[in-house]
Length: 305
Image (cartoon, rainbow, N blue to C red):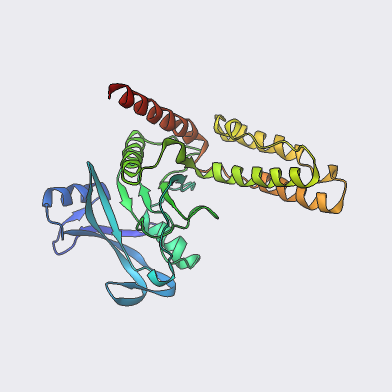
């Protein structure tokens, strides 16, 4: 189902075929109060009431967007009802975490809002920034508020999501340019080092390895850690699945000796088999290039000083 009935300017009878076209209108308008809005085909029904401009709402049929100028970036700020009272302030921001929507159909802001508030009951969209295939950057949650995108690692991080299934498709050039420019601006604003740019999968692998290390210290065993690099170097979904099966066979519950060991091995085995390739196997090489290119830029800057 197409969530968007149409996109139009607020206060004028101007209609746009995309948010990119609407963004160009706002840039040309040069009015900080100007907005565009997406009118939805069906209202989003909230599990709990949310607020917009002091008004309590149980549903919404519109999402508004205003223009934010951030350095050299033109960003659309999504304005929609949220439950601010149940959201926590973010801690000192120290990392950037990249995701993909991972769906067969390309997601947009209304679909994410419907999924995360109507169906899941969240206070707002969990990601801080949403990047479309045409390179439009949308601010969907204030960076001052803790996100909801990586379990156990939301505090002190900013979540970026790419609107594409990057297991089956390549990111567009516009998308890559936008994510690179956005990360550069966020790094400068929050003094985030290149080593703190992650894909979602890296945190999941890190959590698994910490459990393995704890078990090794506790039992005296030498269970093998999961190699992050081996996952980030896979070229396609088939290789990703084969790698999961390889590690799952190492942590085979049938090889355990004691009941306690069986429980631990079974837990690790399950985590490996349920591992998702977020932000997508087709983005891994770009993630590694992104970090390497920024390291090279830093070295060049230091040498020129």
